[in-house]
Amino acid sequence: MRATPTAPWRDRRVLGWIFYDWANSAFALIVMTSFVPVLLAGLWNDGAPSSVGTFRLGLANGLASLVVALAMPLVGALADRGGRRHAWLLWTTIGGVALTAALALAGPGQWSFALGLYVLASIAFAACNALYDSLLVDVARPADFDRVSAAGYGLGYLGSALLFTVTVVAAARPQLVGLASGDAVLRAAFVVVAFWWFVFSLPLAVWVHDDPAREGGPGALAAGFGQIRRTLVEARSRPMLFRFLLAYWLYIDGVYTIIKMAVDYGLALGLSSQDLLQAILLTNFVAFPAALGFGRLADVIGARAGIGLGLAVYVAATVAAPFVATAGQFYALALAVGLVQGGVQSLSRSLYARLIPAGQSGEYFGFYNMLGKFAAILGPVLAGVATLLTGHQHFGILSLLVLFLTGAVLLTGVREPPPGENA
Image 1 (tube, rainbow, N blue to C red):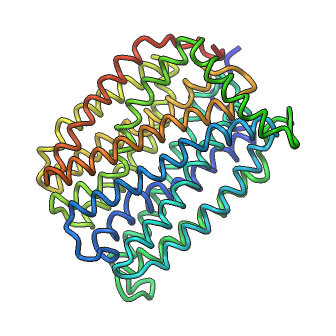
Image 2: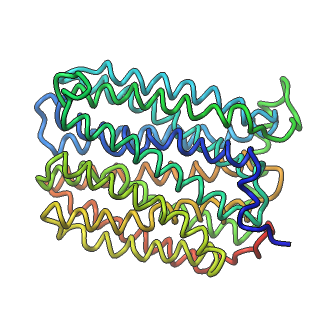
C-alpha cells in the first residue's frame, strides 16, 4: 500500500537526512555560485581581463570535478563494503567545513591561493553529496523517494536562500555588522557558511545510520576495486539504467554549468554584482516551493516526465540567454531556472534510486555522481575556452543546447519502475 503523504516526515532519520541538504546547500549557493565568482572578478583579481577570469574559474571547477569523478566510485564501493558511508560523510563534512572557513584568509590579488582552497573545498563538498545521496535508500521507502528527495532539495534551497539574504544585506550595508567594506563581509561569509554547514549536519550525525557492514577490514580495498568492475558490467546489462546514466551525464552537464557560471556570465554582461546576487537569491527562493511541487507532480505524471518538463524550460532559457541585456531580463531568466532547477535534480536522484539494485547504493551513487562530475568538467571548461577564444560568453552558453536536447531524447527511452518498486 502506498504511504500517506505525511508518513515520511514522522521518521527522524528522514528529517535528519533532509536537514543535511539545508546544511551544505549554503556552500553551493553562497560560495560556489555567488561569492567566489564575485571575489575572483574583484578583490582576488590581479588585473586580468574578465575573459581570463572566466577561464580560471572554469578550469578550477573542472579540476575539482575531475578529482571527484575519478575517486567517488571507489569511495562509494569501499563505504558500501565497510558499512561506513555515514562515518565517511561526517569526516568529509569536517574537511569541507575547515576548507570553506579558510577561504576567508585569501586577500587582494591572491586568486591562485583562493582558487586552490576553493578546488579542495569543492572536492569535499561533492564527495559529501555523493555519500549523502546514497543514504536516501536507507532512510526512505521506494514509494517515498520522489517526495523525500524533493523535500531535501527544497529545504536546501530555502535554508541557503535565508542565509544568502542575510549576507547580501550585510554586504550592501557592512556597517550594520561592524565591517569596513562589502568585500570584508564576503570574506567573513565563508566562516559563517562553514559554521552553518557544521551545525545543521548534527541531526544527520545523530539520527541517520547506514546498514550494517557487509565486509570490511584489510580486504575492503581489493573488494572495492572488484565491486567497481562488477558494477560496470552490471550497469551495462541493465538497459534502462544504462540509458538513464547516459541521459543524465549529458543534461546535468548543462544544469551544473549554468549554476556555476551564471554570476560570471552576468558580470561579463556588465550587470552589477548586487543585481546578480539578488537574481540568484530569487532563483533559490522560487526553487524551494518549486522543488516540493515537482515531488508532488511526479506522483501524477512520473519522475521521467517531470525531468523532461524541466529540461524543456532549460532549453528555452539557454536560447534566451544571449539576448539578455538588462537586470530585469536576467531576473526573468533566473525565475525560469528557479522553477525547474530543484525539480530536475531531485527527480533525477529519486528515479535513479529506483533503477539501481538493492544493497549497492553507495557504489551506484558513486557512479551517479561520477557522471555528474565528469559532465561538470566538460561544461565549465568548454564555456571558459569558448569565451577565451572568441571573447564572447554567448558561444559558451549556446553550446549547452546540444547537452539538454540529446539528454532529453535519451531520457524518453527510459522506462520508469512503478511507484514503490525498484527496477
